[in-house]
Image 1 (cartoon, each protein chain N blue to C red):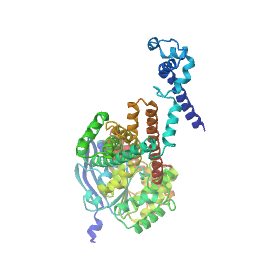
Image 2: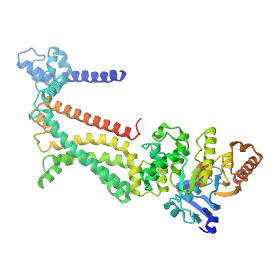
Image 3: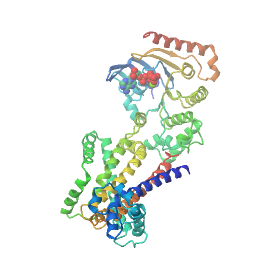
Image 4: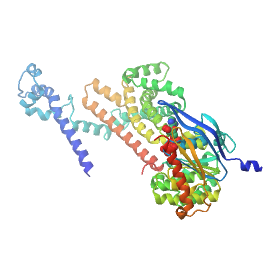
Length: 305
Length: 265
Ligand SMILES: Nc1ncnc2c1ncn2[C@@H]1O[C@H](COP(=O)(O)OP(=O)(O)OP(=O)(O)O)[C@@H](O)[C@H]1O
Ligand SMILES: [Mg+2]
């Protein structure tokens, strides 16, 4: 109960700040519209207004404040505008419609899941190699780290162009970019997890004359599970970012990234924000889902009480 | 089996030496250790911290490689003995796997050694009874007290047929009462199984109560200062600790420890 109150308080504060921020952000545009519509605006000349502070303008034209929350193409849309747009483009549109966010969300989600699967698989394989081979530890880890220092925005178009030139397009290039972002947290987490058994536990298996594969299956892998889930949660969020970034440089026609791009071409800020929120909600759902799987698995293993 | 192999010691160390190379220079953990342990003996190692008790046990278990001298286990090198699964090792901490139930923990060595599922089931049940944990097989380690966990780890070492049992301060973290109880159980178990036991402890009464042979060690460099063959009978109720024989052996152990200490004070 106390938690709920705290969460709602924070939410309320964000909404209040957001509404307040809409006033200075949108006031100049609103005043221009109002002037054209014939309203008395202080100061009347657009040239004078340009050099004035937004807050001062809002105070002097307080009648125009409600209009800052109801513009067609505001610089910063108000929360309810985004909420209405989200509602209209998800629940009220047919899923097959090109304007349905569910449709675009699914396009992005499928690339995210494919990329996440590839990235996770690759990450686990690399981690197993790194833990078992000193050569791989020395050679792979530095490259994995370097790979993450290259801005994905710079790399994504190259990946898409290269794959296009060998005839691969559609979901695969997006999944590759998504995998590129998500394998790293999995590698780091799995390496740490596979190395988490202490010397005594390893010695114990040595006294049984256990083989390397037995050490892996009976000790290292189960011991790494909590670490794996922690990195999967980071990995899936990174996957989603990767899939969206992968949609930007192609001028894609579908996907949340495409919605962002189209919104910014046409100054449809409400559309941009609703696509952003859709992405955030999607990420929260994915992370939450993984959290449930984590709870179930660790509980079955007896590691969560 | 010839009479010669019967009289051959199960564990035999000759001029055993071990020096650890550390960043702060060499540490002489074992120096010139000579010891023979016969089949069915219960041998305690006692001595101040850092005198090499654990190190010696680890050498026997082939978890550490001596830098000098010879060491044989069952007439083989320690590593061959390890690969033959000649011993069970009980570490100072129980070290049960948190993701396995108690029964599954006990089956761990059996799975690795390829016992059949039915055999695993049977042995797990037997050793759980042996250490008084019948009925706790399906519990997870965190549901058990420290003493119960330690007993489970002993059961794990008993589950397969190793005729040597190496125990490194298995009861170190337990209170006096629990410890007495476990000591009694351990003696009964030893009598029943006829295993050869190497047992590290810091407690003089524990060493005297349990052992047929007490090895007193002293540190820097780690070495054996006295080996005491206990005159106590094999049958030992807890109140044997109040008999004059017991007190005399305990006295000799204490003297040995004090002499070892005197060297570097
Ligand atoms: N792996 C290692 N590397 C370097 N030095 C070590 C190592 N293991 C033990 N030593 C050193 O060897 C000496 C003997 O250690 P050991 O653990 O055998 O003592 P111990 O008699 O078991 O002591 P305690 O009663 O405290 O357990 C100590 O000085 C210790 O610092
Ligand atoms: Mg020790």
